[in-house]
Picture 1 (cartoon, rainbow, N blue to C red):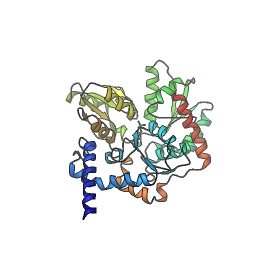
Picture 2 (tube, rainbow, N blue to C red):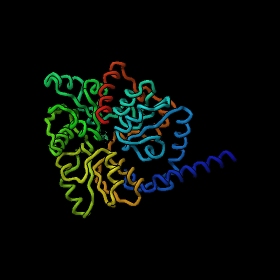
Picture 3 (spheres, rainbow, N blue to C red):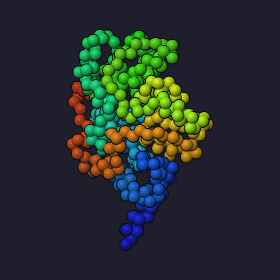
Picture 4 (spheres, rainbow, N blue to C red):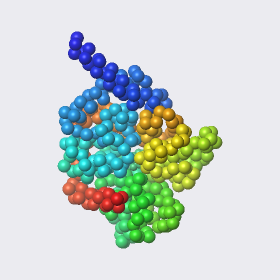
Length: 347
Ligand code: 13P
Ligand code: SF4
């Protein structure tokens, strides 16, 4: 039938487009995406991209989400800072946020008139879940007058209690620029120590008071593992995220946000890199730099991977209440101040 023949041709064309983006990308099971894989994915990417237009929706995706989402249907993909800046200026009616809950909340805070939907529903984050707004209030009582910096990986209620929100791409610079010699930084205990070390390295030491927890993906890497990588692959460049242990950061060639790592690889003339971070970022780099080799020891964020093409399609067509981000006006107003302060201090 002509309709079927037309759809088959469309599917083949879409599978070809996907293979161009995903053919050099390794799946979490260690296999590369194949042409038949792309043909299986094609009906979903076609449907999502079509319905997204009809519904005047935009898809924002964190770099850690599945490659078929970040590369196949996202209109914009990036790190937490870039996603926040983008969310703020969205004109479309609906934001489909492929990421974790605190990221979708941040988009809602920055653009409250939009409907914000997260396919993964209340997907957590071991950092955002490590501290409550009441614990931040207690810290403020304990250390009156000390500015509170909250990592963006925190709930809207925690942001509402904080003075400045920061991300891994600006935490070092903002902390250095602030005039105070003592700062509260929550909820990443490892990044707090990395921040303290970096400020010493820059010649502007400060006392960092912290509370919270750690990222269960990044805390797994060890300095011993870095030494092993260097032994096995002489000349390799080792990159890590500042959520890693301080003794890991101390022996890496570059420590930075997911965007920082992407930029480092893009400007480097080296061909071999080890990435101590979540697999999604490795996938983005494999797609963008087919001439470079990336060693990824392990590290998958199960929360990020709860976003799939299937639930993105479902969330576009008929979102469930748990997928819609609803925040009180009070929380939005208070939390927005800390994020706007971040934009101010980043300039
Ligand atoms: P980035 O802001 O560097 O993208 O990091 C977010 C995150 O959750 C890292 O684990
Ligand atoms: Fe949170 Fe870690 Fe997952 Fe990032 S990788 S979202 S910090 S649990």
